[in-house]
Length: 80
Length: 195
Image 1: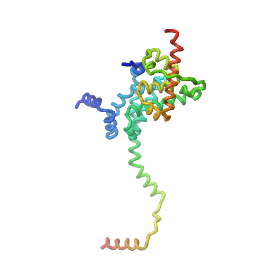
Image 2 (image 1 turned 135 degrees about the vertical axis):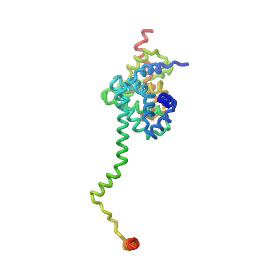
Image 3 (image 1 turned 60 degrees about the vertical axis):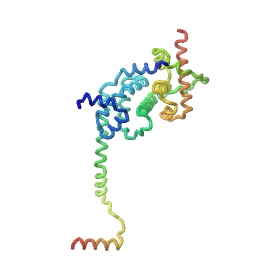
Image 4 (image 1 turned 45 degrees about the vertical axis):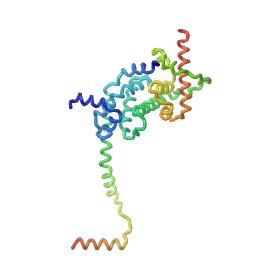
C-alpha cells in the first residue's frame, strides 16, 4: 500500500485544535442569526401591514353597480 | 438517557442525520457534534494555507458560521465534507488574494511560469519524506499547495476541484501538473545534492 505523506502531515496539523472560544463564537453568532430570522418571519408581515395602513393606501378599484347592489342586499339581509 | 449515552448516540449518527437533526430542531447538540467532527480538519487546512494561527482561527469561525447559516441550501448531491471543504478552500483563497495582491497564487499565474512541464508520478509526491514534503509545500505558491491538498489529502476528483474553483477540468489538470512539477523541482533543488 502506498503511504501518503499528505495524510501524515495533516494528522500533525489536526492535533492543533482551534481554541474553544471559536466554537462559542460560532454558536453565539448562529443563534443570533436564527433569532433574527425568526423575528423577521414573525413581524415583517405585520410591519408591512402597518406601513400600508399608515401611508393610507386605499382600494382604488372601481366598484361596479352590480357589486354595489349586492352589497346593499346583503346588508339588508343581515339587519333582518 | 444520560448525557454520556446521548453523546455516544450522536457520535454514531451520519453527517446527513446530524444535518437533518439540526435543520429540524435547531438542536445545539447536533451543531456541537458536527462542529467537533470537522473543526480540526478545517482548522488544519486553514493553518496550512494561511500560515497564521490567529487568521486560521478567524477563518475557521467564518467558515462554520457560513456553513450553519447556509445549511438549508445544502443540496445533498455531494458529500457534506466536500461541500464544507469547498467553502474552506474558497474562503482561504479569498483571504490569500486580499493579502497578496501583488503576488500570484498559482504557479500558472506567475510571469516566469515554467514553459516545459513534465508529468510527475503521484507516488513520487505521496511518498516524499514528511519533513521534506513540509519544506517543499512551504515553498510552492499557496494556490498550488491547495490543489495538491485537494487531490492527495482529500482525494477529490478533477471534476470536483474544477467545480469548487470554477474552472474547466482541463485547466485544473494543467494546474495540478504544473504544481506537481514545481514541487518536484523545489525538492530536487533542495535535496538532490544531499542524496
